[in-house]
Amino acid sequence: MDDNSLLWGMLFGSFGLGYFSYGKKQKHTVALACGIGLMAFPYFVSDTLWLLVIGAALMAAPFFVRY
Image 1 (tube, rainbow, N blue to C red):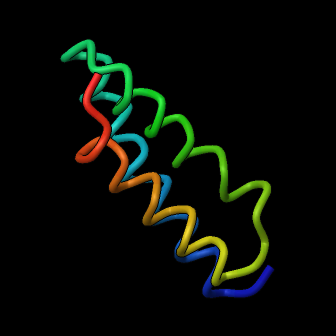
Image 2 (tube, rainbow, N blue to C red; image 1 turned 30 degrees about the horizontal axis):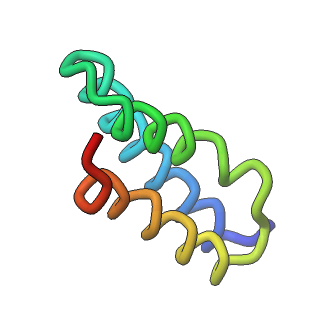
Image 3 (cartoon, helix red, strand yellow; image 1 turned 180 degrees about the horizontal axis):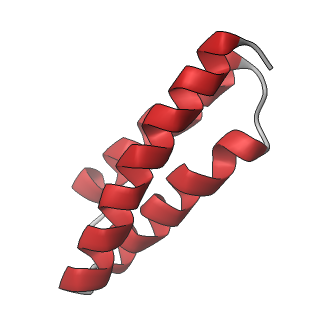
C-alpha cells in the first residue's frame, strides 16, 4: 500500500460516512449502501487506479440509481 492509495482510501471513506449518514437519515437505501461500500472497499483494493474507478462509481451511483 502506497501513500496515494492511503490518501484516496481516506477520502472515499469520509465521503462514505457522509453518504451513510444521509442515507440513514433520509431512508435512501442506495445512498446508505454506497456509503457502506465507500467505507469498506479501500480495505480490499490495493491498486490506486482500481481504487479511483470503484470509488468514483460508488460516489456517482446515488445520482443515477433511483429507488
